[in-house]
Amino acid sequence: MKISVSVFQTTGTAPVGDLARRLEDTGYDALYFCEHTHQSLRFARQAPDLEPRFRETFDPFVAAHAAAAVTERLRVGSAITLLAQHEPIAMAKRLATLDRVIGGRLDVGVGAGWIEDEMRTHGVDPRRRNARLTEHALAVRALWSGEPTTVSSEHVSFEDIVVHPTPLQQPGPPIYVGGAGPQACARVRAFGDGWMPDYGSVGLKVLLERLGEIREVARELGRHIPVVVMGVPHDPDVVAALAEAGVDQVATLAPSAPLPEIEAFLAPYEAALRSALGVKVGP
Image (cartoon, rainbow, N blue to C red; front, side):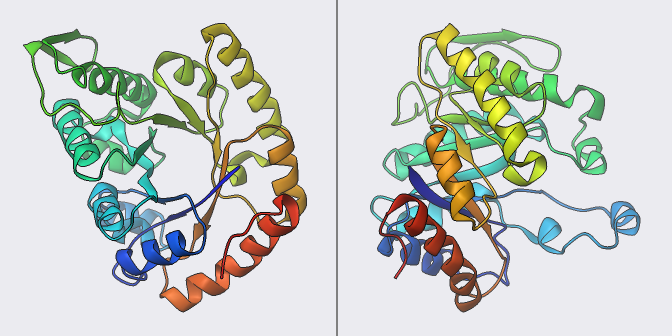
């Protein structure tokens, strides 16, 4: 099982390079960055208790580039980027370029989002956000071929366009479908290379049930579907149960804080991993 961390990177968080080097030097496999593009004053009034990190987070792919620049093997990417809110032609080029620049170490976790005010600012109808997510992901994947591409769907329309560069990873960086709701399997079947559910949103019982459904999809498609569970609690019993179920990777959500506070937060996570898996992770 691979071990990773996600974070809302902000100006108050440990510098990206410092955190990335610390993780690579102590046995971690990946560092993922969360995304929200903005927060309106209207929504701030509606949700006054929402943590500042939701409006202060860095662009995940700029942060990923910085993390890759100071490491050699650490995989980097998004967990998650709100792909329904991004124009797919520009995103296809952005991700392919990044994958080239960082030597093929990019993972792309995607989701439709939950803040409806944010979606509407981007011109996304919250009622159609999952359909738009699927169409954007399929368009990005098609454009990664580097061949003339035509797409005509509800939310995406272009004809005979070519986007270069192509990604270093072929046919492209793995796209992980975020979310653990009833439609997660359908989105994995439609466009996902893997599944990236959040543990805290459903808990162990539902997560394992969904995992069984994902395995059925994998059998139908005749391929392995890697699973990365986000927000894993620092509990060796939970880690052991996920490992026994065949989860490929676990991640904890680090606080948006200076490095000493992040390291203190990671200590029980690392202890749980060592207890459950016998892995050498941490100082």
